Length: 255
Image 1 (tube, rainbow, N blue to C red):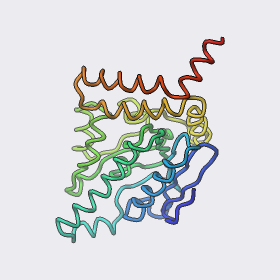
Image 2 (image 1 turned 120 degrees about the vertical axis):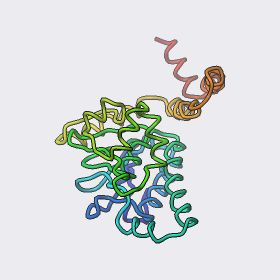
Image 3 (image 1 turned 60 degrees about the vertical axis):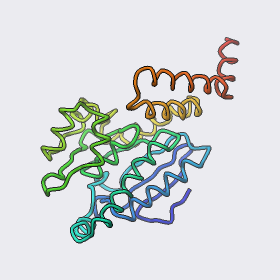
């Protein structure tokens, strides 16, 4: 898997699709090229049956610092229609992450701020170094972290979400883990090895079961209790008919 867009590098390492934001001189800031590159790499990974997980990381010291200066300048000069199209492009990226059939993991070093924090939070799992920083500073320039709020609100409590978006400050990785924004925190010197070990677990579980579980988990959001249970009944039935489940049951019965 190779992306033509060099601001985002795509590679396959065993069963893992590694997507690297490649603008270290700009702290991997988001612009049209990066957003389109991420979409292209995610779609390629989703089509590859050998891929068991996707890891998104940043080249250099930081994960992603949000929109770059050129993008902010364009926003200030654009029409309502242009800004609407620009915002929808980022929305499409966040939606795509949830539609990718395998787990999408953010591996965060350094700073993940504004849209970069939103990108990390949009992933299914967030792994971070102990020195990583997370935050939504948009309010400091009169901007609103509007789309990422939909993701943030589903990850942390209402009061924590408000504190993060209204205060415009940053929090460290340990605090982010404590409030549910991050899954695991690792030491800097062992980070790549720890990420590799973490995602390798997806090689040892059923691909179809993970795919169905991811889809159901996000579909349940907003459902009533009984509707969610019925959705579970439907997926449970489908899972029983998969080859992985049939083989798993047969193997278990032989023990």
